[in-house]
Length: 441
Image (cartoon, one colour):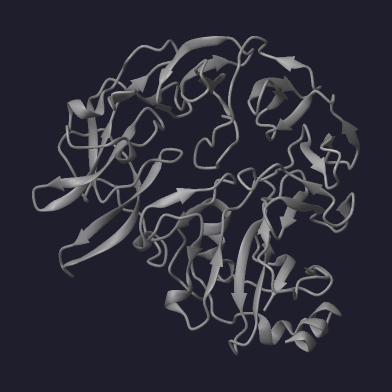
């Protein structure tokens, strides 16, 4: 295995042997836009095996070690790589490091450090416990010593901690110039949303904010505006970001409903179905939210509701909408089979009707795999488990997986050589070419 990897690193990539020769009919459209392509496997634009390319693919010097690799999303051209979740090497996607190998660290493994345009706050990997702001350019600036911990920057601000008596920390916000932001607002870092932000993102000029109680053992979620002013007081156990000027909130007593930007209660999903939970209700998209497929008659349908709670339409196994489109199934009565299809919701209270232009040709390798989820690069992924990775190897003899694409256009991926002897893990671009290989085994 060592010899194989060294041959690859020297540029003899064995492209013909190691490139998976099977074609994935949906791959290009799926990776680029989450769309659905034709089912004509001979169309060149729809054939995209994962592969290496001499002069483009980098093999890291320690790619052959046996350690687990924790790799952060590529952002501003920088990604982090760690073997223990606390000490990181910050690498440029084009090669080179910021500060050298294992130069930086975080307080604990719950924080995944991520470069943003404002920079990234981390400790140096020494005993000083000094925090530094690391810029995407490689410039480094020390933070005031009063700050003893920090989160990532999220949409222009970060949370920083100062020490108080005992082991308690007092968390407040700073802006990109390291000056206090939203003075008087005390917070506490909480994992938020599907991207596991350390603080909530700014959406529609509103940002969810967690404010701890005075005892520090509990707290509530509210919302502040882009200037840092609390506009909806902290009172909820859970919240989501605003989408279409609506946000789902959950009270301490488990009641949940949508509010508008003034905090006014709007649609209450349990008024149309008392047996659903927040996880069954999507955010709003194009003025409609989706309640997960529920049994109606002999089939299962997703239901689509307006902000006022009016039923707008239903779809067989329909998904939540994304940019006005979702996925459904249609029934070919002649063949007595179900097939996936792209769905463009049309206002209707008459129910599912496959004759009204809702059917668009779909690729069976995608939509039949379950409900799509979208990564930050707006790429649709399909998986049966709805996890952060989608495996498409079950249809083929050589398995591979693709994770979420970042806005920079790179995603973690795994590929197995055709003889099954070597597995490669790395970062691919949106054409399926490996830019970096960080593990070979």
